[in-house]
Image (cartoon, rainbow, N blue to C red):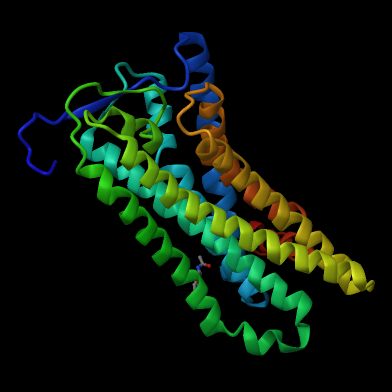
Length: 307
Ligand SMILES: *[C@@H]1O[C@H](CO)[C@@H](O)[C@H](O)[C@H]1NC(C)=O
C-alpha cells in the first residue's frame, strides 16, 4: 500500500453546503457575520480573563483556553467555506485536505479533554471545597491545559497515520464543505473496511471516554449540589447549567456524526456546521451571559477603556 505505483489525486472537489446560488449568497453573508462573532466573542473572553487578576483562577484560565480552542475550531474550515460560497469550483489540495483533517481532530480532541478538565475542576470545587486550593494548584491547571493539547495532537496523529497512506487514486468528490474524514476515507481505492473500523475505534474511544467521564463527574456534582442547599450552591448550580449546556451542544453533534458515520444523510452537514460554527459562538455567549463575574468584569473594562 505504501508503494506509490498509482497516481495519487492532487486535489479534492468539495460539493459545499448546498447547490442553490441564491442560498449560497445568503449563507455567504450569514456565515461572514457568524465568523466575526466567533472571533470577537472569544477574543473578548480571552481579553477579559487575562486583564482581570481576580479571574486568574483555574476555572477562568481553562475557560479562556477553551475560547482559544473555539477560535481555532471555528477557523480551520469556516473561512474556506465562506470563500467557497461565492467561488466555483470548490477545490482543496490533497495536502490542504489532510491539514483540515489533522486540525479538526487536534482542536475537537483538545476541546473534549479540556471540557473534562473543566468538569474535574468543578468537581473538586463543589465536592471537596476545603481542599480545592491544594488540589487545583496552578501547576495542575497548567498540566491539564497542556495535557489536553497533547492528547488532541496524539489522537489526531494516530487518526492521520492510517489515512495519508491510503491509495487515493480515483474519485475525489467530497459531499461536504470541508474534508470530513468519514467521507474522505471512503474515497480510497482499496477495501476501506479496516481503516473505517480503525477510525471509528479511534474517534469513538476518544469521544466515549470523555463523554463518560463528563457524565460521571456532572452526576456526582449534581447529586452533591442537591444534598446541600445554601447560597453558595445556587451559584454553583448556575455555573453547572452553563457547563452542562456546553457539553451537550458539543457532544450532541459529534455523537450524531460518528454514531451513523457512513449513512450519508444530509443532516450530517447540518450537524457539522453546528459543531464548527455554532458551538464556538455559543460557548462565549453561555459563559458570559450566565456568569456574574464575567459580566461585571466586562462592564469594568468597558468603563476603563471606553471613557
Ligand atoms: C491557558 O492556560 C495556560 C496554562 O494554565 C495559561 O498560562 C494561559 O494563560 C491560558 N491562556 C489563556 C489565553 O488564558
